Image (cartoon, rainbow, N blue to C red; front, top):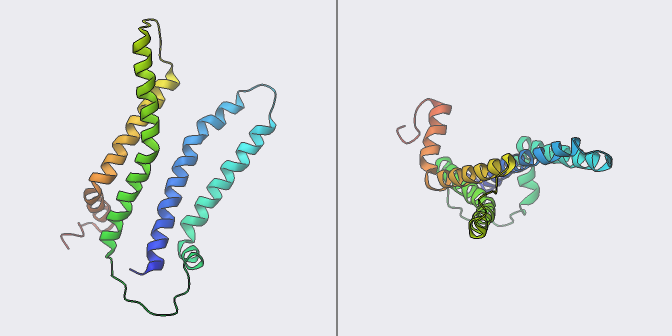
Length: 172
């Protein structure tokens, strides 16, 4: 696997991550629709979301072109350690898991702090709203997904190869 291929895989992984991040911002954008009055911010949010989706499309459909533009031209050939596609996929899945975990940890700290402060106040009449419950569930799901990507990347890799080729790459 050449260095351009590695950057192309990273570009596609970043496109997936960016798309997930954009999808997470859609509820906030939808909340702007229910606001009365000041609507210019709605147009700005729509432009940002559309630009983000366009960037995702460019990163997904033209990863090798982007890789060639990002990488410097090599004047001297150097010995490269070859990485198999299976190992590159495992590394990519693990790195994606670390990235998801990096986003989930601050949310988890926020919700744990809020939970502890509410219990310290000892207010029996505090009611969690549906948005708060959904946000806690999202944080738990993100942490579970990150753990699965980090610690189960070889199993995910086998599942991908089984779906793609009909047999596990390790068995072939």
